[in-house]
Length: 162
Image 1 (cartoon, rainbow, N blue to C red):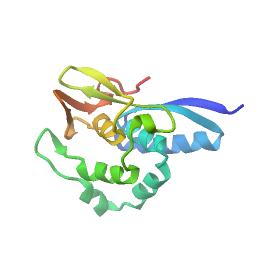
Image 2: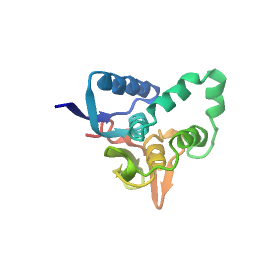
Image 3: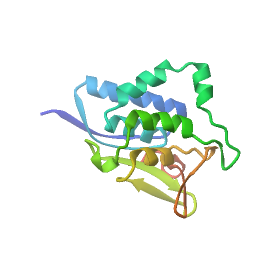
Image 4: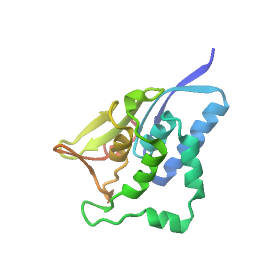
């Protein structure tokens, strides 16, 4: 019998990169991750893992130098300091076109709808868009508009989406 775990990854900004080490350690100890949920950086790392691209993502992040990071910052003066198109464009390039329902394990990304002040749970649809909405830290990243909804970081209402 294998050891199984459902993984919930929370917010934390750049500290969220520690989630990569957690996943690697769980796997090294023989755990099978059967489902994953996350908000903010946890949704990004969790989604990349669920898509089977964690190694490629880690290699890309580790290859970045200071100037590379600066080049990823696409400054905006509208609803957030950074548009996020460059960094999430690279993530999209790594992932390709992937829908949540096509992942090998169940995945949930949690965002906050500022308009209606409620949590939005993405369990189907475009993985890239769900991660982008869940990680849109208010005032830092521009929000994701979805119809009448203004979606931002899921950690705003639920920093650990259980």
